[in-house]
Image (cartoon, rainbow, N blue to C red; front, side, top):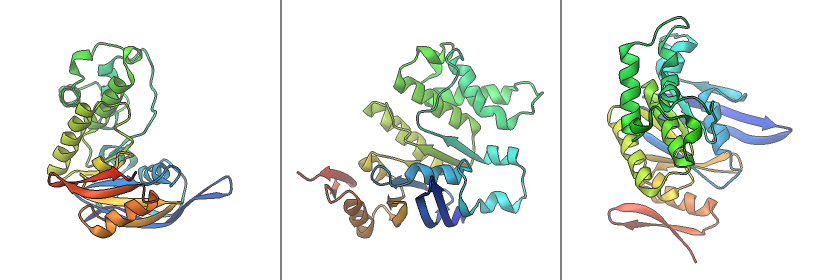
Length: 253
């Protein structure tokens, strides 16, 4: 079943068309990565799916829409992690992660044991638990990225949208992120990520290939047509090949 469906979606900014007539669906329990050159509309598309950008057309969440839920329920259902997000520098790591529990609490409600346990799980999964009492301002770029990821995981939503989640993460931590995503999908969660790291994107289930505000291809990472579309939008400067039982993007020199 589709959990996100976009129909004839377009976005214009300052008279320029950023997205043009996008039609696509994302299936439940899959990890889809969006790839393409700079300026192709990847982040804008993700923001539209998250409800953060004005657009023409239609974006629906079929499972959520069927229940006629309110916006609070939607915030529990869909979590968002943007790139270059900032926060109050004096907030502790624990408090930043606890922000992910806001959709589960009333304005006047106290933090529950369930909230504390969700935050603890999220910080442990991102290897940030040991810094829970440190302030956000003390952290490096990679450490902050892990805390922001913990905030998203603390929501415990059915859909997770992440824009450039691997920014500032060293290779071992990128592997940890991959393990987290695979675990989410194993529990029937849906993940959509915008990635610059094409080889990492090739570990997902499906790829959306974008260029000039349009979907050039949407298909399985194992399809040759998908590989050809990726190579084409990057001007054939990369070549997708099998290596060690997986697909990797190698530079063409």
